[in-house]
Length: 263
Image (cartoon, rainbow, N blue to C red; front, side, top):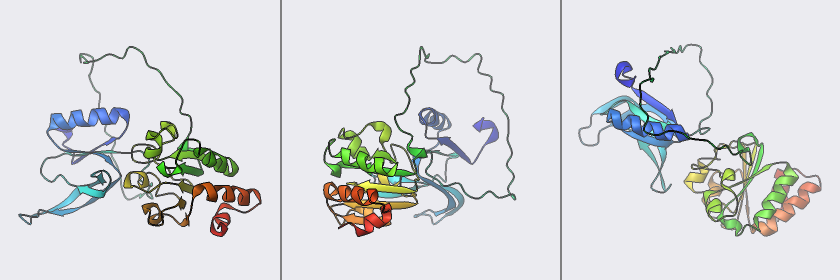
């Protein structure tokens, strides 16, 4: 299909199937592939040595080097430009009636194709939580300290009628199940309120929650990167702060008022 249509750009969803299919296709086409993009833009790129300017390239943006930088990757030489994109990382833009897309139906003839593997049986397990549907999320990181301390987050979420999430560090430490993981390797969320407790704010985590309408961060480290994306911040021990928040909310205050008056 790519050989026949010669597209400039080829995008795949960063799903289980997409992550398996995309590199196979990229290898067959001998072109590059950028995985798990958190943003895509169209722009130009100037070669640093030849100073040649390439216009209308796909700028493939994703965290790199362990999340320490945000890299913009371009492929000016070997097309199609291919990337996989995580679900939910981009906001839906306003539709433009001036643009007209064309849907091309292709009848794939796969009857004589011999597959290298066969699915003998499948097992489905329901997810324990639907983070995408939650309007309020209380999330914890390694700074929570233990699985027992995570009980405070569950208590706060119950008072607010919200869901509980966790960073990858919290999941790796066994504080909470993987179904609750938020970030680049978990679920991307955009709740009305996101309360980050004991989360340092690594790039991988921020990419999965920084589009939340309001973010409240609770951390004992005043220099924690999470405060850079938070609308409200409390510097303090969450074992002291959260019970005070719960008491204030049960007393009739909204969470923002409770947060700004908690001492």
